[in-house]
Image 1: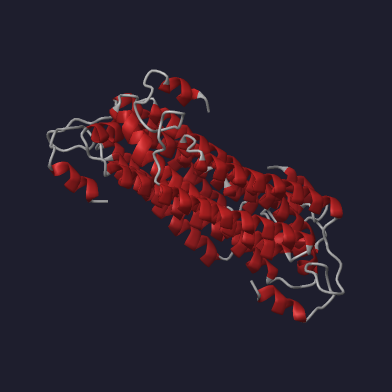
Image 2: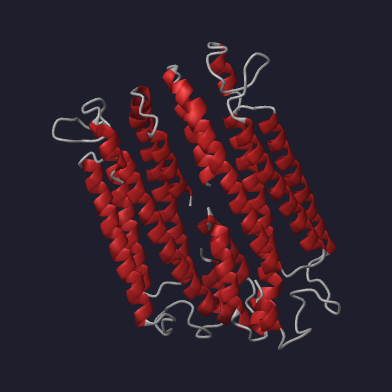
Length: 113
Length: 113
Length: 113
Length: 113
C-alpha cells in the first residue's frame, strides 16, 4: 500500500492523485457526497444485520440482506474505480508513471475475488 | 423472502429455523457474539472508508480497504451459510420440506455474484 | 476429494450419489445431455478465444469473450449444484450423513471465489 | 464492442492495439504461446468434465473440477487484462483517447461478476 507514496516522491504536485497539505483533492464534492451517502446506507444495513442476528431472524433472510450489502459495496467499488481511473490513472500515465498499471492490476484482482 | 414463512405455517414449532414467540433460536450465544463482533469491525471499517474519502486519501488505498471489507463480509457470509446449513437445512430436509433446497440455491447464487 | 468415498463405505447402495458397478446414475439422460451440450458450446468458445489471440484480435474483445465463457461456466456450475443438492445432499442427509454439509460448504466456497 | 473500432479510425497505425493488414500485433509470440497453452489445458479440462458427467462421477468431484477450470480461466483473464493495460490502455491514453477508460471499466465489471 506504500508503493505509490514512493512512486510519487519524484513528482510532487505533478498530479492531484493523493492529498497532502499542498495538493487539492481530485474528486468533486458531489462525487464524495454521493459515496458518503452510499456508505451511510451500507452502515445502516450492517447494523440491521446485527439486529437480525440478535433477534434470531431466519438465516436465509439474513443471508439475503448480506448479499444486498455485498452488492451495494460493489457499487461503491465500481464508482471509486471509475473515479480513480478517470483521474489518477490517466494523469500518472500521461506523466510517464506507467508503473501505476501494476498497482491498478493488483487492486482490480483483489476486487475481483 | 416470504416463501419460507408460508412454507412453515404447516409445521409450527417443527424446527428452530426461525424465531417466533414460542421458538428458541437455533444459534448459540457464542456463535451470535462472534458474528456481532465481526459486524462491528466491518461497521468500523465502513466508517474508516468514509473518513478516507473525506480526507481525499489516495483512491487506490481506499479501494484496497474496500476489498478488505468485502473479504470480511464474505467471511460473515460463509459463517452464516454454515450455521444455516447445519441447522435449518438439515432440520427441514429431515422434516420432508425439500423445497428448502430451492430457497438455498437462490441464496447461494446471490452470494456467488 | 476422497472423503466421500470413505464416508460411503458404510452405506453401499444406500443412495445413488456416485456410480460404481452396481449403482445407477442419479441424473437423468436429459439432464446429462443438457450439460454436455453446454460444455460443448463452452469448448467451442475456448477454441474461439485461442483463434482470437492467434489473429491478434483487440484484447478488449477477447476479454469480453472470456467473460462470456465465465458466465456460461457459472451456468453449468449452478445446474450441477442444483442437481447435486436435489439428489445426493437430500439423500445423504436423510441417511443421517450430516457430514455431507461440510463437503458442500467447501465446494460452495470454491465456486464463490 | 464496436466502440474501439470507430475510436481508432482517426489514428490508423497510431498504436498496435488491434490488428489489421497494416498493423503489427502488440503481444509477443511468447505471451501468445503461454495463453494458448493455458487455453489448451482448459479445453482438456472441459472435455474431462464432460467425461465425468457421462460416467456419472460423484457431483461434488465434478463441481470441484469446475471450480478448478474457473480458476484457470481467471488466470487467463488476469494475464490478458495485464497485457491489455500495459499496451493498448497506455498507448491510447497517451494518444489522448481517454474514452478507452470507459471501455475498460465495462470490461472489468463483466470480469468481476
